[in-house]
Image (tube, rainbow, N blue to C red; front, side):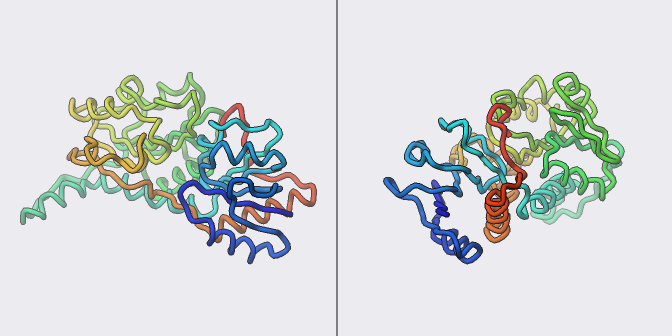
Length: 306
């Protein structure tokens, strides 16, 4: 059993040692050009050369939640692409989104501005019933986020490609359900997978269908958002602002308008980080299940993109 690790921008050595500890009967190494054939690979944004040199690969385990970068490569149709089910990311995502939503709802940015100038201010409490939160994308992360928001008694809407039935959450689906979902939403949380169909889905047309004073939390992919459209809608007053964790170019360029916009909060793609030990335990468990001839969760449909 040969396992190779190929990361574009992360040091592979800690992962090599950790996989060896969790799976001592396997041979584990970091990939270099011309390396021997492997049975399974653990990857993050690998180059096409890696795929081309490893025709015998059975499975490709991605250490992030999204697999859009992998599906842009030329992959053999027989190669299983496997995403992480959770591995500690859903609770981090729920923390991040709830913090962003509550910070906006309670107007803490305004209080921060006032206290920095020594001003003791008061704002009239808002009504939760008027702040319906729409979670766009109801996969593992989206469902966890939606349930977490319910704890704070926000009305929660959910949107997905296929039908979902989640207790206490008003669910919408498909292209026909998107306009009604948007018009029922005051705070939009994007957790959609990035596919050709969802790229640029957060644009002038869709965002303007949100309720007046809408707020955006984007924690999925930067390519979902048409950045110029967001700025226009905020500056026009239709949207109140945004918290953005993902961007078309990362790191975000120093001269980007988002950095200094007073109504946009920027974080450096940190909403849900991969936890090495949890991820390795899941990957090793899936490899062992495959060895036993058992099905595994998380196998990606190449056509659908998730």
